[in-house]
Length: 230
Length: 314
Image (cartoon, rainbow over all chains, first blue to last red; front, side, top):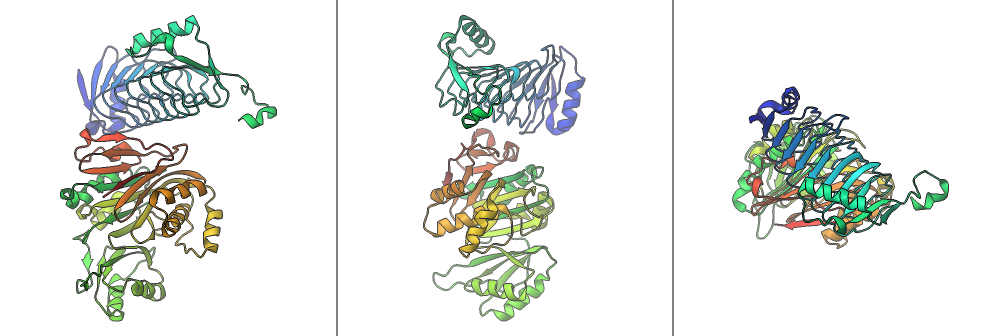
């Protein structure tokens, strides 16, 4: 496995090197030091291991519309917006993630083995986010499509102004956001959670014991009659 | 943007290293605030060995009387030697003036108020950046790492620091508009964010007789905080007043003579990361500002929750 040092290459140099690699390349990225924008915009199915803590936008814009993309593992924690606008591939964070994890992700799977901070999955557009621990307030805000699995507890305002994304919560929900509602789990929901538990290894989650949160669709289209509910 | 920094040392053995721990933190947050910066260092004795001493004697204290430090800055070129000579001729006791190219810190045993009055009338280009028994404040425009170099911050010692890198959004880029704001002795406030209702709160405080140094939005929060502390609130209560009265986004780091606090707005719109070890507590806008601290690998690293006031006491 090749080793690429962030300190030696700098952020742009590192990303250029990563972008030049073809599958089945496998690289170890060292000395991240909380830098932003590491391993962004990588399309090929290469394997990237980041040894340490990363900053904002780790793995953002990776993958393509077909769902393929790199497999990124971070042996540490990450800052805001990990996997922002992810198109495909896998990002696994061994530690916790700061705010807006997986924001606007269109595809791919983002696995957070620790907790996620506020607004995880904001404006999610089709990607999948799995959090082993807790998710902060306002998670799933305006999520349009895709799936969020929370293995711990969800903070206040969960799923505020949801569109068609589904949120599964294994623990407690501090409160639901505007127009979010708890819906009965179907057999297909249990299958979907079971598949995610297999993918992530989050075997503390009982697939048939989670709570499903979706849009009540009352505020789906703006109407001045509803103005008091926003 | 803007970058906020707080560093409180629990281990006195680290005190000589405070400045060298601080400089990489400001450097890392330079991208968040490239236009100006400010650094407040709390020390029991002198925080610096650098700087040109233009006073002649070290102030002596009579029984139980503490030295007061007066930090000065200006947006104009100042002849600090002339200032020192003027103060020396007009003060009864000695005044020690350390001159740092664009600012100065002076010490006096008994005449801080007298000195501030002399400066206000005879040297109107000079402004008092802060007064306190423990705190020395420098503020300057330009890149933070350049200000650190110019003031020799790497060599400064102390037990606590509050610092700021500024990307101005609400008011002008000048020394006086820079953070930290020091609205009361040894009380320092730095802010990342913006307040939307600061003009109306400012008008109300002005009507109550509060004096402002600038039209900066963050200074309003600092003056409000100082007012509540002066009215007898503890730091947590005073900070809750800021959350109640001020609309906007904020991460605030607040230093008092013996404590450091951090608080974020209800939506946690502005970032903050805390790292705590047995030797220190460090707060910064981004983790990369903490990445070079000694023992960071073993630190407890966490994000302060919205609207919760975290306080660490020396």
